[in-house]
Image (spheres, rainbow, N blue to C red):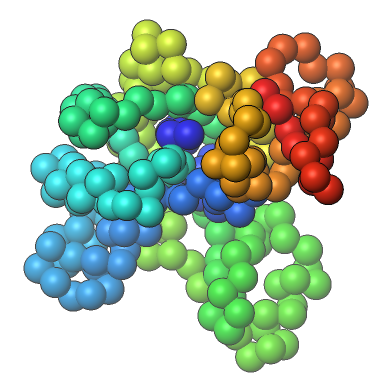
Length: 267
Ligand code: AMP
């Protein structure tokens, strides 16, 4: 499965991409992470990227497209991935279409994570990482106990360089101008799925319901290779019973075949 997560800065793309990586075995590809790594390396390209990131601007399309062309052609992402933070404008979306067509691949969905402006601001201005444990927290939403634990362990709450108010305002403006039009782009391609992402739990549940209903998610289990693939989706069983519990109607994996000692979800 090849999935794009679309959404404003702070909409939770990174969190959901990590969850999908853990639950569905789909590698997360985050352009923000790749660029931050380059910035730390101190290379000339990295330093240029850091300047754009610190100002809340986009790194140049040619650099990002070159980086992604290489990443998407690597063998560990041959059977799918979740794109987090890419594409961010129409040129990148068209560039992605070209890379995919050269590789003979297609996208399964572009999931737009819908969150109000007010919640985005709180998430972005309050975001902190514990210097000791690396735990991600938020001064507006995390429990006092979690925040105290970091301090008591001798850590400090670190704010990302681009999470200050000026940069945040600019990042949101850049998002509205450059990235938001991609909602229309992917709607026209019939790939758009809009999910309410105001809380982490709602986002997780809503994304799962949408993905599971996609044609690419189901399996016919007839060969050992099919069976191997199913085992990459350890949560398929849980998902099917969750969908049953909410009375979901549509295409989804069902538990209706027993293979050896393993129950297998069949699309
Ligand atoms: P993120 O971690 O996705 O919030 O991205 C952090 C910063 O990295 C952004 O504000 C941009 O400066 C840069 N960035 C990330 N992805 C892209 C992209 N696809 N195109 C250009 N710049 C990007």
